[in-house]
Length: 141
Image (tube, rainbow, N blue to C red; front, side, top):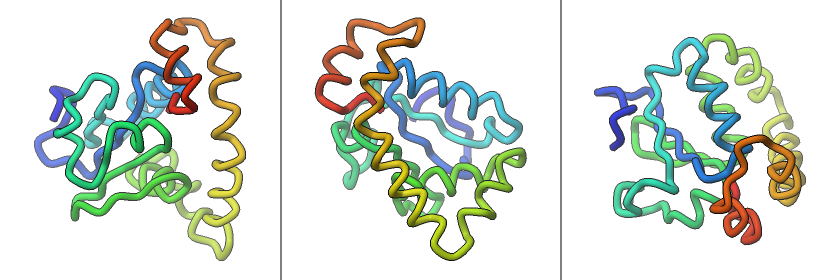
């Protein structure tokens, strides 16, 4: 794990640090109360073997993934709900996600958002040339 990983994290978050949109969102979460208890893994910088046997770099860049302490992976809306649950100021969203049908609705919204990432990333400051390839491959995230 990276130096930003606590000794016993409540959750491990995989993100694409080469994507300015993803990096900005992760900075917001990392600065949140409770963010120090989360292991933050930049999949663009890590050895793919460090991601675990059930997560590839391309999969981690294509969708938001978290690993729970029991080793189970959650992605998309379920991944966000798991992250929100460990960050005190975001817990209300985790509680809302538990309401019947809302996690499914969140997943639909997330899937609709995914194709927009490359377009949105073009307008962010700090956009790097490495994001051109990632976003062009729809893996900027």
